[in-house]
Image 1 (spheres, one colour):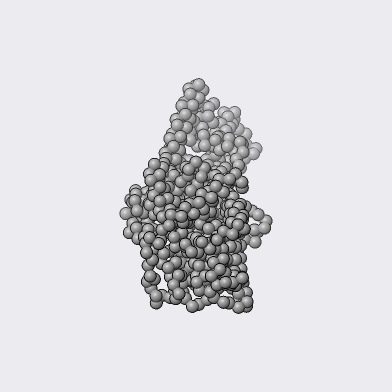
Image 2 (tube, rainbow, N blue to C red):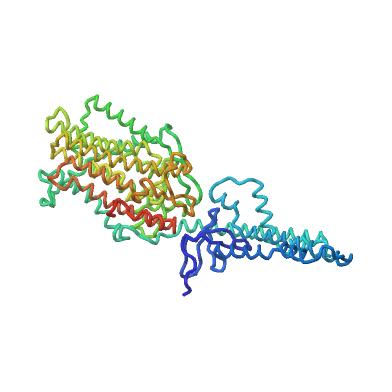
Length: 616
């Protein structure tokens, strides 16, 4: 098997199919079977080229220098210097010499035109970087391309005074040649577009979560884990020595009224989502180039929800009803997420190929059902995945925490909630408000851009987030923990440090993406990539590769410390969060390596630590 000559991420010169033009391209992948390189042109087109159609940039620079050294003008000038100025010349000799000089000048013009073509087009670079092109540049590029495509016609035009071919015949041949090249170029572009669409809708080959067996296990393991955690918190001594907890009667886990309340909550948030308030923004481009629109009004929905809850409390609605029926609410949410997942998979079977998720298109029912088969399922303008990502589960987390605070006061006859409960509610309220205030940032996450909407996200958004993330508050109701003010102050400082790292790192990245030339970011250094984007190597992103994850873990620890150290159960969230972020970090590493190639390897050498400095 022949050895591979060009590496992924290497910038080379690639020949455009059907022509003799070479453009600057980047190698993205190599097929060991067909021995074809997949390259990306500066206008975003991806094509498969043979090794014979690819040349290194150094060979082009070498050819340019050789052409310059053998310029006809130099040869002409050397001959002129060797002839004596006072030597008389006959008319015939002078006429012949003038003819040769005239031909040399014409050949010089053609040679210089070829040299310009060997240099990567500045016009292509501007188009690749998204800069506008002037009409003058387009015209110049068109003329140069025409001359390169038809060297025989160009030579004939230069030497037309010596040619006996009629001008009409020459023009007719030129028109036929141009029409043929335009038709061939259109065919190449159409094939490239079809190939990009087929690539976007190709089958998923790399299966995560243990493949079909792993995802089948998780469908049952995740609901069982939620039930186990809630039952353990209900025990008087929630230690590992009391495993397994006593199972309640099956009929006690389901109540129609609780399911009705959950549906009311879900559709109330859907109503807030559909209200025409807040700005409308576009998401990232899809595989077919289309951009979906999203209404950013999550913070407004949170404010309206707070007004509804305040009204219920004013009319003495017993909010601790949530605590008394917490298990039933968790089961109702799990049942609803399962029904929603079945609906999502059935409707995905009729979805166009370009709308399927790149990570959930394996062809295996269980795997695609779990990870999500369709990328952005919508009912009209109602985006189901985007809605569930931040609304019913995240806002529901805050409502559950408030219900636990009121339940603690009622059960223990307290006029004020405990300091531990206040810390947990305050820290997690800050986290939720921050997510809703910066709602637009979620449009660039892998959940939105890569993962389909299936059981994994449906269960995670509607069950795992509200009922597992509120585990500390639920634990404190049955196991109150007293902490001193100095300890509370230290925990508060720890949470503020984690939040500062999390928010400043995300803000730094988002500002750099929007405008890398912002004078406020002049202190930041970056590594350029072939995609036109830069990789930050200073600031928080030069400290570790994922500083936002580091801030997340620090905050998770601060949420658990108010529960004390009597049991490990409140720290389940910290352990889970570390495992989750390490898994996401591995996915990000794989995605960035494919996207940025050699630039990502340089970044990893510059920033060796992934999440924890000097550790991992």
